[in-house]
Length: 110
Image 1 (cartoon, helix red, strand yellow):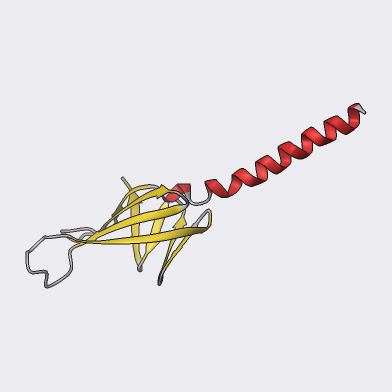
Image 2: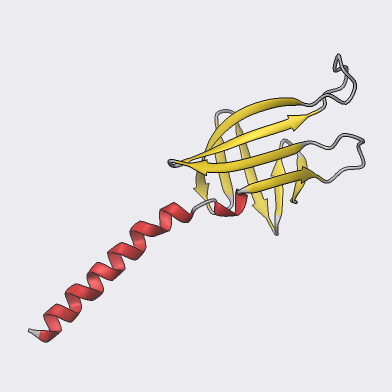
């Protein structure tokens, strides 16, 4: 009888550990990221998480912008595919050795 109770407790612990793992996917993406570049106006990416969705604000100064140095902000949404990959509509972000790779650019967390 004691063995059966112990097995049930371990089984419940195992199931609870497995169910909690998915919530932690992608937490390394959270925060404020700045492009590694020598450009005068580096791109910025801010990522937050709410209700199972990663909300991304990408700020960039595009060449030919009507106001010199004015950032344009694009709002995006993504889901974690793994601990190191976020997938959104038409884009992906990858984490590698503490660096964010996005649109061919490299970002560092600030």
